[in-house]
Amino acid sequence: MNSATDATTVGVLGLPGEGPTQLLLQALADEGIATLLLDQRRFDRTPLHSRIDESGDLGWACPDGQTLIALDSLAGLYLRPMDDLRLWPADPARGQAGQAWTQAWVEVAERLPGRVANRVSAMASNGSKPFQSQHLAAAGFSVPPMLISTEPQEVLDFEAEHGPLIYKSASGVRSIVRPLDAAAKTRLPQIRYCPTLFQKRLQGTNVRVHVIGETTFCTEIDSDGLDYRYASRDGGSTTLRNTTLDATTRWRCIHAAQALDLPFAGLDLMLADDGLSYCFEVNPSPGYSWYEDATGQPIARTLARWLAGRC
Image (cartoon, rainbow, N blue to C red; front, side):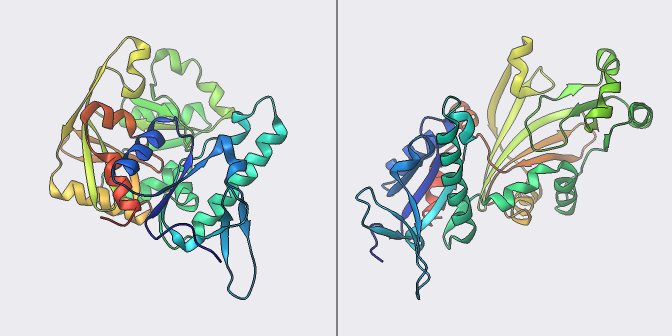
């Protein structure tokens, strides 16, 4: 098999104009790291081929269609795939072809000998908040009391025991955190058709921690919204600033990410007024660009160097 890259090439799968992917591509360029762009909108320019022979070679074709690049020539691979079918709403056949191409690369990532941020098999842990919570508790974090239910009375009993609640999706699907206020209680019967996660509402300081290998970047969030990501939608505001964590909390973040096999992760913490450090979840594909743009933290550059094996 001919090799057209060296051991420092990093593959990037996603959309080059999307925030986190764009920052990483720029950081790779700034670091002088050879990059293989796997653009989902132009998937047919980088066809994936497998060849089964006595050597068990696996690789992908160069644009000339002749040179096959060896899988083990990639030092690292960054995966931030978008939904292919949504990229081609007017051309379902092309969307399905793109979906098959993306899935092929996802499967390649599972056996790639280099570094991957992150393998989809590990990302699946975000599909269950209770599952993640068990790992977070094992890492030493406090976990807020939670209930997943389809029974309105069970929710009211949980509130009577723990005080004010918030609710959100129990899965990895992004949802806006809302308070279980009087208006929300009038809609409680609807949970019979959709299991919903309810959590004790905590008071304290929100901190987002990005973990890359054993490096951490910590951001303190000051917001007048319950869900700071969407505070502006309700007329509020959010301010992000650099912060530091004590060594114990920092190590817990690293340990939790490692236990979930997520070398690149975004952890949502609250340093609560009760003196405990809570972790709500571990994001396996963090949209870190918002935090980097606001704080100047070199998240993308550190990620680029990690993928290339430089740190």
